[in-house]
Image (cartoon, rainbow, N blue to C red; front, side, top):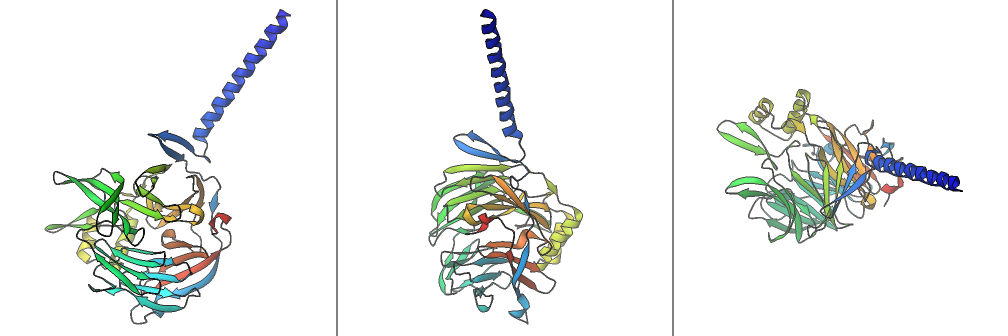
Length: 400
């Protein structure tokens, strides 16, 4: 009897050790599994850590052309320069031409209806280059860092606001509030940059995100007898997008692959991380950057100064962020200067897909997601083309 009891105890011990080992192996796997993230709570905030491999694989879009808009057809004398696209709730299309300071409206079938906004200092006019453009809640905003104009979706002018100071890019929340960034200083020296919620009376409502790094916001190239500051595609900066559906702000520093999701009160709900690698800017890519600046109208001595001493050695990890249906979101990640892939995350922060370029869309930088397809802006030597596609193989999560 004693012998049997000893055998039973031995079996129980072996089973316990085996189960313990399996639990340990499972716990280790949760940390290193290449398709599933792990979470960690830091200061009562959930952090989600993703690897480089998406849970559900890679998407190369299969496309069917729906319509094409040639910028030279709008004004044959001076072709339009398309550099942003948006749609309203009725599927009317709006294309921004920041070089001509114009917004072009097209009906859902792609027929040109009207243009509005112009360069100037009066009502419905912007003095400087339009750097942000948004269509939301029956409003169309065109903004510079010191002013904005608001129109309705029929192109009727509603209001203009000029600020007392210069802000970062404006992300409009509603008619009375916007998100922007402000430099911080100590003893007259710049210490970093903060993302803030402001009202249109320039009152601070909340501090959302902070980065203590005096390089954030601008890159500087040296010109004879002075410094010229500019914001380029390679500048270190804080960026932010407001999601009107879940009422969250997505904040990030573009040289760090971490996204901070928070409410408009600044309370952080989660932080999403993803593994990444630095991408060095090569000589051929500097030439490509210079061609883009030349197209924007940079004078030759600015181009020469940039070529002689490029301000950044590496491309940012995050080029920009876009909102997708059902509270999914995408991060445009740099492969090289002219190539991006779109990392797609679900509402919980899991890295679920990579969207890659296709034959029809070789450059994802100018891709816009709508509830009825994908819009793409293609830059040609003398004109721009907007093409809209129906995507045959997108997962059902992308349907509203």
